[in-house]
Amino acid sequence: METISFFDGRKIPLERHKVRIVQQLNLLPVEERLARIQEASSNLYLLRNKDIFLDMLTDSGVNAMSDRQQAAMLQADDAYAGSESFFRLERTVRDIFGMEHFLPAHQGRGCEKILADLLVKPGDIVPMNYHFTTTRAHIERCGGEVIELLIPEGLKCQSDYPFKGNLDTDALAAFLAEKADRVPFVRLEAGTNLIGGQPFSFANLRETARICRQYDVLLILDASLLQDNLYFLKMKDEDCRDLSLREIMRAVADQCDIIYFSARKLGFARGGGICMRESELVDPLKELVVLNEGFLTYGGMSVREIEAIAVGLEETLDLAVTSQGPEFIAYMVDELEKRGVPVVTPAGGLGCHLDASRFVPHIPQEEYPAAALAAALYIAGSIRGMERGTLSENRDADGNETLAEMELLRLAVPRRVFTKSQIDYAVDRVTWLYENRDLIGGLRFEHEPKILRFFLGRLAPLSDWQEKLAAKFAGDLPGSL
Ligand code: F0G
Image (cartoon, rainbow, N blue to C red; front, side):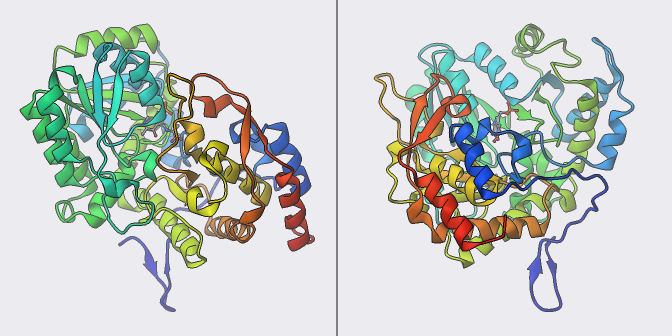
């Protein structure tokens, strides 16, 4: 709907904004890229931003801000307690979600920590459509366990099913019939991150909520990627087609008991928070906010960011803003598919996801194919993606690898940051890499942290494949960076 048709028949994701502040980018020659990735131990988190041309690591905290957000930041009310900026955000959140309480946190995982501290005890099980790394880490830290009840279609990389983030509601009902006493809450994630930014449908949310009510179990929505899910509900869901984004947002919230979000994503700034109705959980959660995050009127956020989030949440309800992410992603996915590159379909939110299990099928999961592909793409194009595969998993209690269900390289498309020619550049470099995929080899750990090992782990290539890849690039594109 928002995509523009050209006279020549092409459909183009036309930018509905103009660029008024820019940041210069470096594009290092391939020999230097090789040196930088080796210094960073093949872990792209350990690169320096100045050495990256297209940073497609994440959209978290790096969506472009609007002029109105920047303007709001200048008028922030700096106070430890009782800041007017906080009350402005609280009003916006109440208005959008229709929930009475808003508890601020410094970012999404701050919300996850205090929710897990209050609600999860040893032996508990938390059903969800799919886990997110930090969410699961906090539930397990409190002695709980995560069970994933995603519909089977959700794990198929190639599909045309529009709602791959749906929770298997029959499985949920059967699970709760047996074990509801061990379930502190059910968690549904909007725009399901680790399976390729895939949305749930409204009917699925409604049925999940009905089952939760039947068993008197809380339904908690992780709304960090709700902006993408809203877009897909509007565009693809019969139940929502005739509603405005604001109406869809409210209809979604009406089904949930608690909503939390990373405002590094939802709200296009940096922060987070928990929205909830009146209940006996409000006071104990407030105490945990004060203990862990900061006073109740800032929760670890700067007041400037609080102002920016209030404006950003309103802007999320504008389809011309919200559509830009998924439509750029759909363009990138289509262009790669045309060139035969294996990508997750249908295109979701957050980013374009390369399917490493088909891109580099010769690399076994124990050699981290998606992480190897990430290092290779930095060498090929100075592009930083994020591994979402076995490297992002934890070892089991006996120290064995837990093989991921999907081996993905996520190329995030933060909103309003990249131009279409930069996306075309990424498509070109990914395509070159696909043509040369046989040169890519595996990785092994040299230093492996115990928790969330993908952030700080140090790896090494299993051969001199990185040198060979760089040499092939220099030979194929002489004179080009
Ligand atoms: N939930 C979801 C669905 C997320 O995607 C994230 C973060 C969090 C919670 C945690 O929020 O980072 O503000 O503490 N996702 C980022 C990403 C890190 O790159 O996908 P946070």
